[in-house]
Picture 1 (tube, helix red, strand yellow):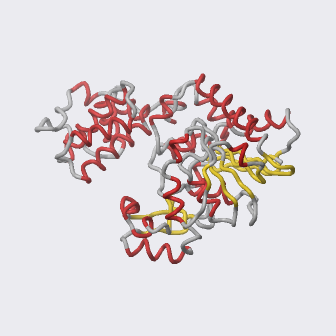
Picture 2 (picture 1 turned 135 degrees about the horizontal axis):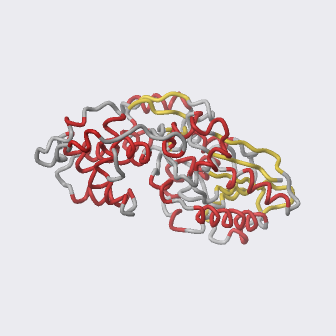
Amino acid sequence: MTPAARVQAAIECLDRILDGAPAEQVLTGWARGSRFAGSGDRNAVRDHVFDALRARRSLAALGGGDTGRAILLGLLRRDGVDPDSRFTGEPYAPKPLSETERSGGRPPLAGAEAADLPDWLWPRFVDSLGADAAAAAQAMQRRAPVHLRVNLLRADTGTALAALERDGIAAERHPAASAALEVTSGARRVRGSRAFLDGLVELQDAASQAVVEMLPLRDGMKVLDFCAGGGGKTLAMAARAKLTLFAHDAASQRLRDLPERARRAGAFVSLAADPAAAGPFDLVLCDVPCSGSGSWRRAPDAKWRLRPEDLDRLRRTQMDILDRASALLADGATLAYATCSVLKQENEDLVRTFVSGAPREISDERRWNVTGGTDGFYAAHLT
């Protein structure tokens, strides 16, 4: 595919997403229906679409409209690419720009538009992040870094770095967590590398690793990952101490790959369909469902789908999870709460509401902002 044809394919995908279809579903469908497209073409189209979604509002302003064509025009203008080199009218390319398109577009307005957030969400974003709000929004307009966790059950950091290098992947230590690496080149080779396939490294954001590193884990503890999802934090805990470790998720299908991942990592994890029957536990981690606002660089269409009523519903779910997890604790145990959100309503405000009606106190609390080179995360320990 030519660069212009890639832009046209991205325009078509983006129009379907703007009509309400999930981004991943649209891109998967396009790839399956475009057998002529090589891996480089698929990656380029995906990058165009996700770059456009991350900065949808500001790019729409630059391009003069909220359509796939206008947003891609805004993306080219933002990135200093001559639009006429892509809007050529050649076969499979976008048709040439009209005079209206050439003269249209403007700089985005300060506030929600320049921050690429819905109008209703911008005040909450500012309230949550204060003076860091604009810088955090700007960071979210660009791609997220690729982070790896060195699996200490299989290798030390030096061994992992050497193994990655043999597969053409360059990485360096990341300061957020002791086993964290940031990939500096060759990111798309990671999943096929021997280091990954042999369990030396796992894909995991550095702040997500730091959430686990913050836990007061000790050999011999009985621990439950209550909202385990795919099990990333479960496996990270297994590498930190000799634990009797259980994983549970309300959507049990999310755990289907965990046994194989644990085998590759050299970890032992029990799946707990009924956590109450397996308890009580010395520590329960609740990495709860949330807005995902700290990871919108990775799933940028999510921020355009979020509504105020969704945030209210999520808060009720988060409180319910804390209530249920509290009943699973042994005397003196720790209840760890975490989100990949930057919003106070899901973090500090919710935790303080919870402890105000329970015989617990906040013993530790921390947040990680996207301006620090990680996803946005929050964690609190309740004892």
